[in-house]
Image (cartoon, rainbow, N blue to C red; front, side, top):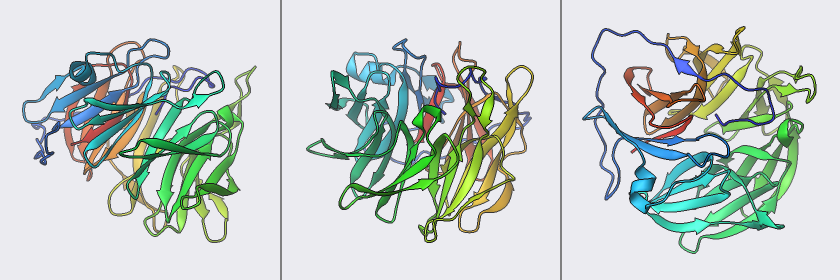
Length: 356
C-alpha cells in the first residue's frame, strides 16, 4: 500500500505472531544470472529520495540492503511505487522521481523511461504485464504501454489520478481515484489502446483484481475524506463487478478493506481492518474464491496491527509493516498461510515483495 497524501496520516503496520518452532526455509528456484530470494521494494518517505531495494537470503536468513545502489552506484530515488519481472528484465516505477527504470535481473539499469508532460514529467504508479508488454498508470490521467526492446511508450487517456490496474481478456481495467474524488474504472481495449467505457464504482478506487475466467472484476476502494474536517464521506468498500452485465454489488462482509492482490488458483488475498483510538489498523487477511466470491476463511490466524502492504509472488505472500520513521518489517508466508520468516526490510515503508 502506498503512502497516500490525500487522507489523514494512516497508521504504520506490523504483524504480530507467536511461534515456538523454527521457521521453514523454502527452496529457492533458479533465476538465470539474477538475484535469488525475497526482493523487497521500500517506498521510502515522500521527498526524501530514500527508496531502496533489499534482498532477503532465505538460506542464510540474512538481508542485504541497497541492492539497486550497489548495482548502479546511484540511489533508487523518491517513492518506490511498484516493481515487476517480465522475462529477463525488471521494471521499477518511481512515483516521486517520475521515472520507470528497466533493469536486468541483477538490477543493473538498461533503460530509464521518462515521459514528458507539460513543463515536467509524468508520475508513474502501478505496473502490470500482458502479452509481452508492460502497462503503467500515470497520475496525470493516462495508461501507458511499454514495449520491451524499443521501450517506446504509447499513451491513452483514462480517468483522474489513476492508481491500480489489472489485465484480463485483452482489456486493461484502471482504478480512477480522482485523488479521492473519482468513482470510476476505465476499461481499455489493448488492441486499439483506447478507452471503451467507464464503470461507476465506490468513491476512491485503488486496487483491482480480475477472476481467471475474466467474468468478474473486484474493486477495492479506500475511505474518501472531507478535505476540511477529515470526516469520512465515503467508507472503504470491496465490490464485485459482473463484467457481462456491468452490475456492481457491494461485498458487505469486507468493510475497511485496505488491499486486494491476486493469488494462485483463482484466489484473492484481502487485507481489511479498522482503526483503533491510536490510528492503528487492527484487522485480518482473508482469502476469497474469485470464481464465486465465496469467503475461504482467514489466511493466517494472527491479527494484523499497523499493516502497511500486501503482495503475492511465486507462491509467497509478503506482509509489510512500518511505523513511518524506522526500518520496516516484512513477514513472509507460503501461499497456504505457513509462516516462513520475519526480517528487517532495511528501508522505510516496505511496499512490494517479489520472490525470485
